[in-house]
Length: 406
Image (cartoon, rainbow, N blue to C red; front, side):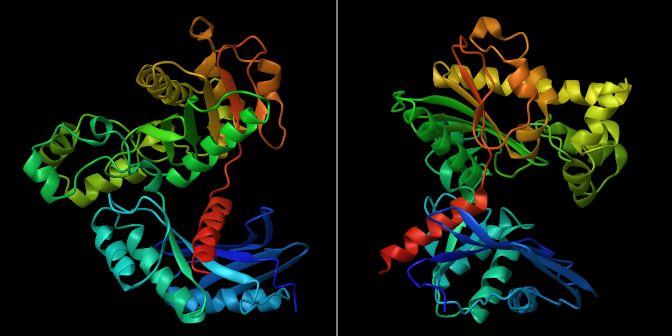
C-alpha cells in the first residue's frame, strides 16, 4: 500500500456531456493521473487516462455521470491505480456558479448540493452537470470529503460599484442579477503566483496592482489589488467582456431585441448565435489561434480583422483596469492563448511604452516553461507569462477543507 502520509486529491470537472479528472498531490503539485470521459449521455462514450508512462482507453455506453465515475474507476485499475487508495483524502469539484453566497470552498452537504442545483438558473450549462458529477462521485466514494470549489468565489467580494448593474433594483434583486464573474479559480491562482514570484525577489506586494488576462477559448480579465479582485470582465454569465473563441463578449444589449424583431429569431437561437457562433469563429471562421495567427501571417483579411477586434477589446479593458486600480504594477498573461500566442501579446502591448509597458520582443517570442518575465528591465510595469493550474488550485483548496475537518 502506498504511504498514507502522502495525501492526494481527486479533482472532478463535470460538463454537460463530459467528466474531466485528475489525481494530484496538492503539496507538491504533481499529477498521478489525468483523463476525460466524453459523450456522457450519448449512445456511445469514450474515455482516456494517462498515468506517467501508462495509459488506457474505454469505449462504450456512458448513460450518466454516475456511470462515468464507474468508467473512471475502471480506468484507474487499468493503469495500476485505485480510487480506494487511502491516500485520497478529498474530492474537489469544480462548480462554475456559486452566486453571492459562496466565497470559499465548502464541504458538500444536502444544502450545498441544493444551492448548486438552484444556482443552475444562472449557469444552466455548468451547474446542473456539476450536481450530476457530485452525485456520481459521492456514490463511488461515499466516505471521502467532497468539496465544492466555485469559479465565482474570487469575485464575491467585488466592490459594490463593480458588482452592481444599473438595472431596476427590484428586478435585479428578485432575479439575482449582478456581476458574478468566472474563471475565478484561475485568476486567484495566477494573481497569487505573481505575488509569490515577486515577493521572492524582494518586492513589496502588499498593495500590488495587477491585471490578469486569462485568454483561452473563453477569455476574461481581472483587476486585482493587494490580492483582492476589484473588477472582472465576465458578468452575470460568461458571455460578457472580452472577445472569445465563439462568444461575442460585450455588445449592445439591444442587438438581442433587434435579432428577435428583424430576423425573427427565438431566444434559444439568439443564445446559440451569441455563445457558439460569434467571437473569432463568427468573424473569421476559426477559433483556434494557431490557425488564426497563420492566416494573419498569410494576409487573410477576415483573420486580420478578427485579430484587430480581439486586441482592441483587450486594450480597452487593460486601460480601464489601470485607471480602476489607480496605476499598474503587473500584467499577467495566462491560459492557452495568453501563454502560447506571442502575436496577441505583442499586438496588445506595442505602442504602450508611454504608459510604462515595454515589451522585450525576444523574450516574448521564446517558448519556455514556468513563470517568466517578458518586459524589458527598464519597464515600469512588469509583464509576465504565468501558467495557470486550476486543477492544482482546486486540489489545494479541497485539501485545506479536508484538513479542517480533522
